[in-house]
Amino acid sequence: MKQLTSIFILVLLLQSCGNPHNQEGLDAYFEGSLSKYNRHLTDVIVADIFTPPVASRIYAYSNIAAYEGVRLQNPEHRPSLGGQLNHLSQLTQPIAGQNYYYPITSLVAFTEVAKQLVYNLERIDTLQTALLRDVKKIGIDEVIYNNSVDLGKKIGQDVLARAHNDGYLKRTALPRFSVNDDPGRWRPTPPDYMEAIEPHWNTIKPFALDSASQFDPGLPTNFDIAETSQFYQEAEEVYSTVKNLNSERLEIAKFWDCNPNISTTKGHVMYFQQQISPGGHWIHITAQVLDEKKINMEDSAAALAQVSVAIADAFISCWDQKYRSSLTRPETYINKYIDPDWEPILQTPAFPEHTSGHSVASAAAATILTNIFGDNYAFDDATEVPYGLPVRSYESFNGAAQEAAISRLYGGIHYKPAIELGVSQGKEVGQHVLDKIKFVN
Image 1 (cartoon, one colour):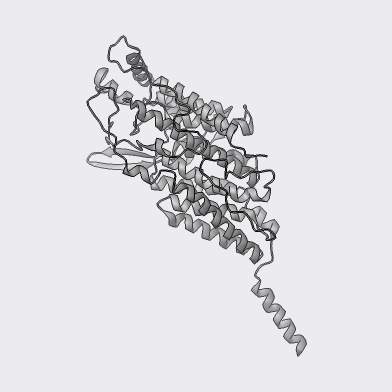
Image 2 (image 1 turned 90 degrees about the horizontal axis):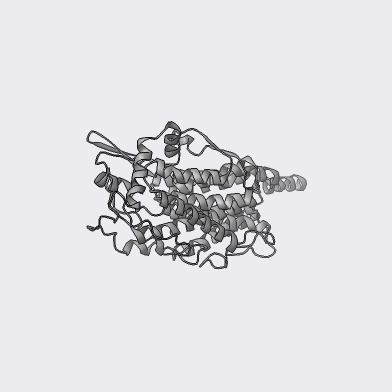
């Protein structure tokens, strides 16, 4: 009788422990997980219609948190960003003597941050719930599980502490952009005539830059309406480029459009089409390469954090000059001084001309990726396939960045100096991130 009772108690104990700790199954489950979760985050960002600067901030904080979670499995090799990134304090550390499974910590930290920065927090919360359910189903020691989840949530809150004090909340109390009679000053453009987007983005605290103006590219060409002036010739170049666009250049313009919210009017009805942001496009390029090369989670987290920080600082740098110069867009100038019936290929975004955000962000991201994977890494970019566009192939990241930049001329929404100076500006931002922030000891 005592033997039967002992067996019964043993069975109950085994049942209460759930599945045994399945290390191999867990490791397989987390392969490529950060690429997958960044794609899920993109889906939410697109649906929530965040502007390019705001989207870049969301990617940066989320990927910083993910890196901080998984780097702990090899802290002697992977330093913390706490104390390296501006205004990011030291983060919560594991408790000595306790066991953790850091991939869980990483994704919990990622989702804890992401759900506080998007509108549809329920979708991110659902992702986290599904993650934890899957982990338990695969099999994990209960103590390790609880330790890992708790640490991930604490790291997420540490990262969010910076987000709550980076100027994002205060910017909405600042004055709106004012439109006046200055013919060279930016003004709203067709078809929506939207107000200027994020005129105070330069007040957001940069992650690595010393200031928003650290890599100021310089002012644009002086505004002038004389047909012999340099400015008129720059506008004429945009005008003639669009008028004589071939199929290849048209495809390039559309591929790199990345306007998060395009409006279309049919009759009296207006509807909107959501797309990925330019920063999101480069996050997806990064994720695709990581998947192709089967990069482990720790190295993937470092790459995504590095790229996202560079992109976020690129937008802060770019937006600083945009609203310093507040230059009119080609569409406004051409319609008034060259051809009133002319239209660009792409819808003109609702912010000033100089410099090109695509150029700055793309060059910054390409600088990071080239440093990680090499100068001649050829890849097929399938980012735009979900949005109805074909795959495009590139011989290098810099080649893709150059195409992204010149696409703005083909699309009719930027003068050449905004593109060329934007590329230089982005390279400087990217190189500064490489020089200042250590991801490897």
